[in-house]
Amino acid sequence: MNDLRARLQLQRGRFALDVTLHVRAGETLVLVGPNGAGKTTCLHTIAGLVPLDGGALELGGRCVDGGPDGPFEPPERRCVGLLFQDHLLFPTMSVLDNVAFGPSCRGRSRREARARAMQWLGRVGMAELAHERPQRLSGGQAQRVALARALAAEPSVLLLDEPLSMVDAAAKAELRRELRRHLDAFAGPRLAVVHDVADAFALADRIAVLEAGRLSQQGRLQDLAARPGSRDVADLFGLNCFAGTCRDGTFVAGDAQLVVPSASAGDVLVTVHPRAVALFRERPAGSPRNVFEARIAALEPSLDRVRVRLDGSLPWVAEVTPAAVDELALAPGERVWVAVKATELTVTPR
Image (tube, rainbow, N blue to C red):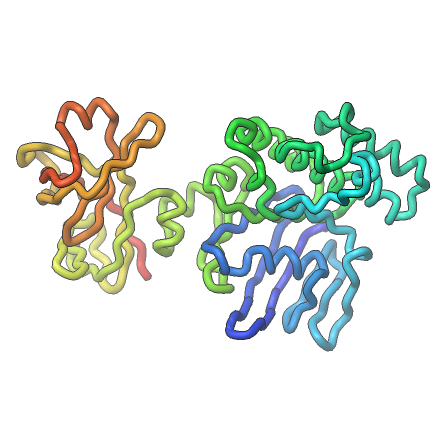
């Protein structure tokens, strides 16, 4: 099978990368994580731009980097398409010749390479600009050309480094859909690095979270959202996440205590969606097991919701509608009652 299998080991000063990846043919794995975690370095090692210090890399069952004592195939022999974050189009070449560069390097005649380039420019809606220079293109247009250049070379593996980071907000939604369409049509494994969580959700079949050179968690979107394994993963989904200990159905973190649905003991993470955090002006009656007072630290509007940050023994975030903000007269500095049902809390061992 044309899978990507890798154990990537690399040492650069005090930074150590040690990542095991398996991306199946026809699958898009998206790498996410904080800056400096090693996401782009993973792409560069797979592309052959950085040789491994240890481990091994197989593309389609062929070892292309076996570490210091193993085989090493240079980038031009790996049949890998790499879409750089800043596109790196050749400034002295036309759009057409940029896209034709890959097929030419793979042995196609100039006529064949340019014909294939025009086909791909047509597929990404850029045929009319074939004879322009890259500096005349917008960010979205350059992204389309860079994608066409990567695909025109007929790669067996596709690597994308922040493919939408240089695109303005107005064009991003359309390009996101277009990129997903091209990824779904590509038969080989696809590995992408993204920073924007919306891009990750739109492009990924699976997500892998990279922290300090190690994979902390990977899986389907719904699995990671249901049980995040770290604060960074919880932040990715915009969840409240607290670390503490659990015993006999009570979670303790510093001075805070919560009734939780799990009777497991030991070190745990407790997560809950901000929309499950209810706010009141008076102490609520009824079923919530966790009720406490807190001071509003900030209000952060976002589309049809307002994120309400709360000060207290735990830094809670609630999400409410703009109408609820007006109805409850919410404002920074005001004190409110907070209620969270125990059944809404997810407990994950650390």
